[in-house]
Length: 239
Ligand code: FES
Image 1 (cartoon, protein in one colour):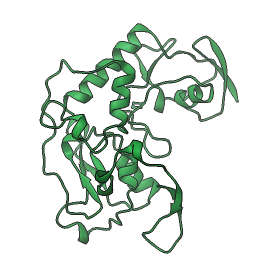
Image 2 (cartoon, rainbow, N blue to C red):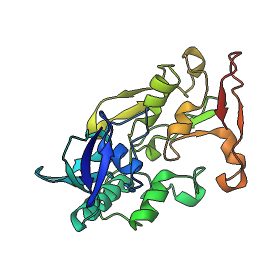
Image 3 (cartoon, rainbow, N blue to C red):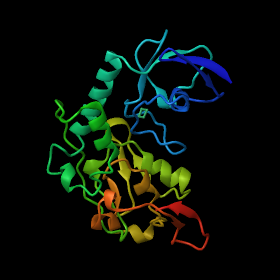
C-alpha cells in the first residue's frame, strides 16, 4: 500500500491500482463510459480525465496507474470542459442527429450514455459528424446490433473475449474508423456465437441489445439471480 493525494485527501492505494480504482475506493465519483472493470479499459471516451500534478494535459484515470505521492485533482473547470467536449463528440456521431432518438431506443432509461449526458449537462452537440452507417444486424433470434448507436468503446468485445471466453465478437479497423464485427447477421448460425448476451449486458448504449428487451422498459423489471439457460454448466448470473 502507498499514499496518494486526491482532491486534497490522502488516500491509501493498493499496488497496481489505477487512479479510478483509488477514487472509487475513497468514494470519489469520476464519470466513466468506455471502462468496465475486468472487461475493457481502452481509454477511448475520455470522460474519466483528471489532472495529475507535474503532468501536462489531462490523463484518463481508468487506465493510469497510481504511483506513490501522486497529487490528483478530479474536478476543475478544465476537467469539466474536457469531459463535456468528449461527450459532445460521442453524441455527435451516435445517431441522435439522424433518425434515431432516445425515446424510441430499446435502452431508453437504462443507457449509460444518456446517464452521462444528464450528469454532465450535455443535451446537444455543436459537432457535425456522420454517424456510422451499416446494416442493422437482426438475424440472430436473441440479439441485435445497430452500428449507428455504437460508441466504439469495445466493452462488447471485452465481454465476449474476457468474460464469456467466446472470442466471436471482434473489432475491425482502428481509431475513429473502429467497427464492431457482431455475429448477428444472416450467417450467424455458422459462427461460434452462443447468444449468451454478455455483449449486450456490457454495451453502454442501445447498439447491442437483447431482443426480449423490446417488450418492456428497464424500470418495469426486477433483476434476479438465475441459471444461464444456454448450456448444462449451471453458471449463475444476474438477469
Ligand atoms: Fe476512462 Fe473512457 S472511462 S477513457
